[in-house]
Image (tube, rainbow, N blue to C red):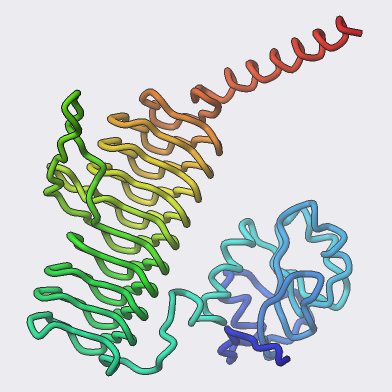
Length: 349
């Protein structure tokens, strides 16, 4: 069986260009014309590839690397072996990400399996939909009446774009995803299987049965947002669900109706955010965090994975646990419980 490489480097980058992109100078004796053919992990990088290192766990791998150059923080620079060019900078991982974007541009957003722009013969675009030039609609995709899609956007195979949905320019809508009742900005990435704009979970409960509450709001996704595979974002009940500019949402996240998420938030896989909760800018929710409804999580706050938030969180806080609390109180609680359990075990003996 063949061993395909799905994403190949674009090439054309030299060692000097790498150093320039990182904002550092090459060490004396390094040849700026040396070609860079790709990037790889420390342990497998070859003499024309770049690597990076910023974690003490990989000190041994750094010492044995054969990479042409390694982006490294100052604390580890002395461990770069002879024959590998050390590019020393404060944040090697961020610089490495920028270089990967130049070397592997096609990995920056979900691409099409089906070539150039245009509407595939296997797609269905309603006659009342409006597509700008250079839009690509792949086989099986459906674009409904009144939908508008901006230039450079890719609609993946079997995606469904509902009536009157708006999608900006240079966005990517992944295979099998569904967008209804949504306004989507520029450079937005929606990964395969995501669902945007479906009903929020709203019922007026009573002894005679549960009366469905019509969900009449929208989903608004601002520019440069990324939404992971199989994530669901419900449309608002009476007002809009909003995802702020630059926010990154992982796979398998549930965002309920009327939620407002600020700019540049990070929401990791498995998170569930209940209705009408607000996340201010730069909030980070670790994996499997649960947030009850009608709360506010303040700007810049971080919530540890697997925590449950049941009250408002002040700006700039670091909380964890169930129910979530400031991390110092949480750590004291865990330490006390561990000591009690240890003491109890000793007594039983």
